[in-house]
Length: 378
Ligand SMILES: Cc1cc2nc3c(=O)[nH]c(=O)nc-3n(C[C@H](O)[C@H](O)[C@H](O)COP(=O)(O)O)c2cc1C
Image 1 (cartoon, rainbow, N blue to C red):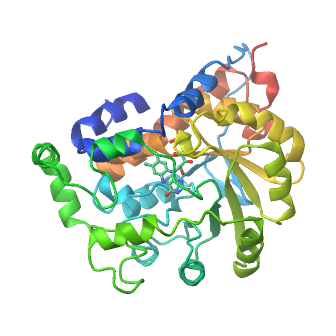
Image 2: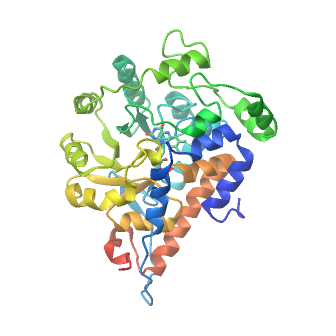
């Protein structure tokens, strides 16, 4: 892993090791992928101020996230089908995050279930909730997350209907899934991936299979899930969830000032400024372009996290400079997982931390709390 010097190296290796359908599921965005591309491009446009001869010998990337100590301002974002990038991907990513001293978020759409992960790690993790039409099932997920002692509930609010991802359709990642000859041939060239997935605890949606009656096959399960996203979801449901979950609540997927103001009123502990990594509304502004107005409107009322396009420690610095308290990483760690399992996720986190550390040194910053707009070049 030492020769993996940047996230792009991990991405290239993941591309070689993970079957195309799953690699492109992770890599891609919705429709023309304009928002996906804007997330990275708008971050890259922000230039950092080079400062010299500041004593930075005692700098530290340590901070707090929702009041808990963290080794750096980063959490691993919820990623569906994580266990299809590498067998037991959720458990391995959670272990890597915990060893690095940062939070891990388990997706509702994970392969390993809440209980699988809880049994395999020794510290609490965060659970991400999609509220299904079947509110009884949503309630049971909340109860299971509480029983597993999850330390925060991340409610994703930007997926009432699914943005179309062209690559998924072309690769057979549809409802029901379509295994074509070209997929079989591709999978046959990835024996290590096959072994890891075969050895993994589960091969299907672990939080759902066995918890909803009549879901015997991947086909029926994926059809049930597709029919369960709820276009009628509203702020009223957020109130209901806030009253059902007694722990910390994070609202993820806010990319608009008016919505951020409403989110504050729900009593949530934090919001994540996010457009789902460019996988939902194509044509939405990049999340980094929406961060400053949202911080301006509600930054003193609620903790603000950020995601979308983070591929380097410099990107972390840019988001913090514009007012995020911490960030989430999706694809950057998923590339690590595909490239090398737990060691790959560990490497992804290490790369981001080392880059942030050097970036702090070269911008004359000693502590995360000191990062603000002054690090941005005019
Ligand atoms: C493959 C993939 C699956 C995702 N699945 C979920 C999910 O199940 N729940 C969720 O809230 N967000 C999901 N997201 C969005 C991420 O949590 C996060 O917002 C996004 O990846 C951030 O952008 P980045 O990948 O550029 O870091 C997913 C993202 C990717 C790339």
